[in-house]
Image 1 (cartoon, rainbow, N blue to C red):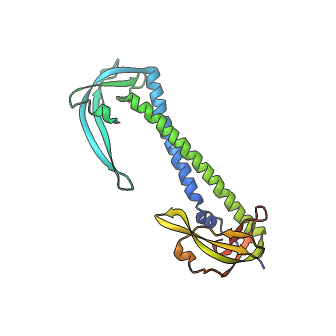
Image 2 (cartoon, helix red, strand yellow):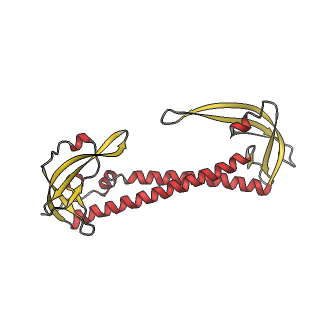
Image 3 (tube, one colour):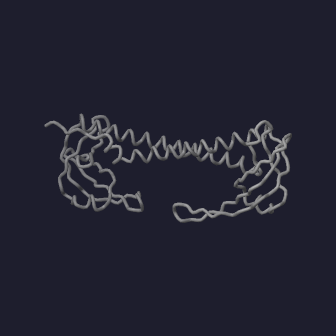
Length: 238
């Protein structure tokens, strides 16, 4: 019997491949931001000149994360005149709490700017340097995790495609419904366990309890076997 066409998009979505791409993109963005901060810090350390500016305003802002947690952001608006120039510039930057509480409106602040480009400037160079290191490190670690996760998911996808296109079809008997330690949107994920006609065991892809509970223990299902790895894939999830 001819097998129906398989949707690569549907398989990728069901296997969560796009989450791996999201993690990879998130890591790359962090790395780019951290790299920019690091380049700025190196430029100021190599070619920076320090002048005295004036604090125009200090402000504490509260930002809330997606989980509802609050985080304080300390911002300072200041004016300074670049070395060798007469026109003043006004900037507003986030700074560390330590520096923030040491400043006051109308008071002086040390401003370091690049000699050739006053637009590259910092009033908290040490924090900027540390931020560049932290952001870049986190970004690289997350990107590597995304690559690893993506590679694992791609291998699973290739296994499923091999099984469906070239693998042996077997009858399998469901032996249990098992909860995993994975949560998606805070919803527990489950898998069905089975044993096929040859005695080999296997498990389904993760899904919600209500989607798998309608397949009771003892029910017979059809699985496809990857000819390369021997892994079984449930027909209903392809």
